[in-house]
Amino acid sequence: ASGLDQNSARGNGGELHQIVGSETPTLTTALGTPVSDDQNTLRIGDRGPSLIEDFHFREKIFHFDHERIPERVVHARGYGAHGYFETYESLAKYTRADIFQRAGEKTPAFVRFSTVAGNKGSFDLARDVRGFAVKLYTKEGNWDLVGNNIPVFFIQDAIKFPDLIHAAKQEPDRDFPQAQTAHDNFWDFISLMPESMHMVMWIMSDRAIPRSFRFMQGFGVHTFRLVNAKDESTFVKFIWKPKLGMQSVVWNEAVKINGADPDFHRRDLWDAIQSGNFPEWELTVQLFDQAFADSFDFDILDATKIIPEEVIEPIPVGRLVLDRMPDNFFAETEQVAFMTQNVPPGIDFSNDPLLQGRNFSYLDTQLKRLGGPNFTHIPINAPKCPFAHFQQDGHMAMRNPVGRANYEPNSWGLGPREDPQRGFRSFADAEEGQKVRLRAESFADHYSQARQFFNSQTPPEQRHIAMALTFELSKVQAPAIRERMVSHLLNIDETLATTVADKLGIRNMPEPAEAAVPTRDDLPPSPALSIIEN
Ligand code: HEM
Image 1 (cartoon, helix red, strand yellow):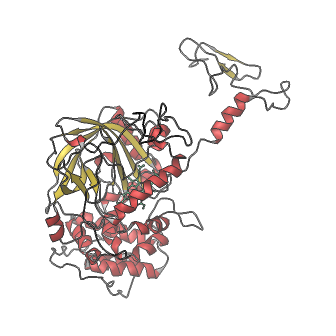
Image 2 (cartoon, rainbow, N blue to C red):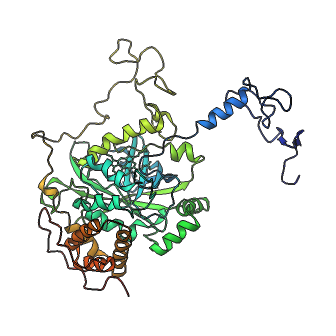
């Protein structure tokens, strides 16, 4: 038949046998036994019962039955690509991280973009945060910058993460909605968490429905540290800026695209890379010292706040180019394990309580998701620099220590040894205090930056925020939750609050939500405009 290769034949029942030829290898079992017939199970006679001794059939079905692993508890739907990072200039003054020592140095990279709330099979253009996770295979170990396309987060302390995600994902009794923020549980939680208001402004904005992954910024969100060879620390925020600029769709388009092509974003990345249009981002850094941190209006450890670019200008330090799709989605994109705690010498953490919690969470979740402690043996997760340690055994151990010594110190002169010069040294920050469960007062202003973001938007963008809030809150059944949200909006922008309240049919305006600290009123007022047309 046309389209079939020469070496094919029909069996008794008309089934097609494609027989091995010079161009194709012999089909084998997983253990290499050549297979003669992959169309029929072994049975007694041609109409009799199947035989349990059919090891080929059993192995094939057994393996199929075990193909699925747990999807990520968040960021389940994602799409990855390979590329490289190229350093512009040496940053040796600030960091001893090898990746930043030499101009022109190229470091292999793998990036996974994702939505947060939707399940693995959900659609690409959900209104949601986008994950922007970058794995850099540096010469001194893997550096994972596990960021988002929005510079702030919903919560200040990692202990609230399970609550946030429970509220954002499907409601437990009905298992919907899958991928939208439009539901009571989400808005209930958000309206009870004033610290989320800045993030809410961003997710109701056009940023949450990007045109494609190629037109998004990426943010490390937290304050990190750069540490130089003299063990001096500089605070840093990491920002990826797309060379193509930023673009979003409008909600009307998003809804249609989701219906017509739920794979719109992944198809876009695939098409771009396969046709040689390699997307590119510049890595920029906002650098500051302790004196700035002490004088800044907000706490640099608070992940619900930004440092405005007018206050500290981001400096470009390198570029990221994505130029190759994975050979296999599961092996690479699905099995890649990002972990915020993967940092090389010269990059360190701040005390941001969200970051500190993440540093615990990611190792734990990878153990569960990838089925054991040896997930670093999977090629996509393994470092590309030399490495040596005494870890051994466990499920699926691919690389055990070779030779007699699997411990240290030993008298045999064998095995790897610590290196006080090259090794990772945590920045020796001075800490003291009582053990308490207490949040600093410097974390308490939840509205000023929300207002600042709203005011930074153009009038059409402000209209989109108002329309998104109206749409989302119109899906909320409980009037008290809608009103609670309007009471927060009153602290952000009165026109926005009254516009949304009008559209929701709220007749008696609620009081503004009680603010923990007064919000700053030295920020420019928003233009007095009717936010929603018609
Ligand atoms: C996954 C970003 C906060 C727990 C991810 C991914 C990204 C991300 C991009 C997907 C990684 C991938 O593509 O494989 C962020 C950002 C946060 C944040 C920017 C805040 C600034 C948190 C917090 C926790 C957490 C506070 C828990 C305490 C997780 C878990 C996964 C995940 C468990 C799934 C990892 C996996 O199975 O591979 N996060 N996250 N995240 N995040 Fe976060």
